Length: 113
Image (cartoon, rainbow, N blue to C red; front, top):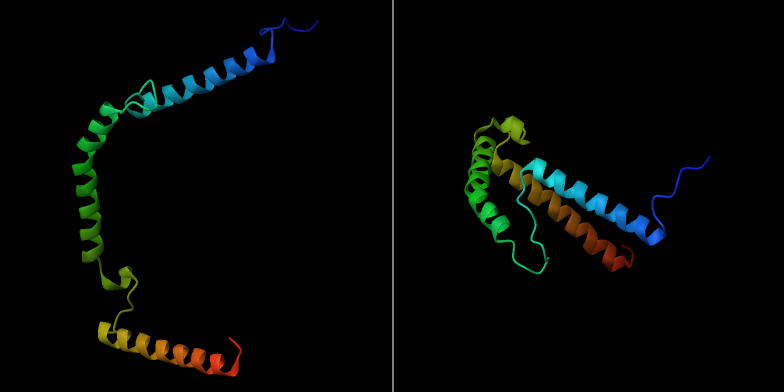
């Protein structure tokens, strides 16, 4: 025996589905600690903006700490090869760049890239 119909039309079924999805999103945001969204999307979310403004100093502090840790870490961990000075690395980069640029000039004159 089939189950009795819950909804009389597809429109009612779709509306119920959309409501369940919206309620689930709202509950998830509340669990994460986000302030509720404004009732009408065009109205400003003052509570949301105030919360964001209060979090800005914490985010900036976290960013500053990460940057300081990155600056203070050993050079080998920062992606710079040990034993090679920055001047030598820059000179090597300039030499390789000149070679590539010269190669482009020659191939452009020959008509092939």
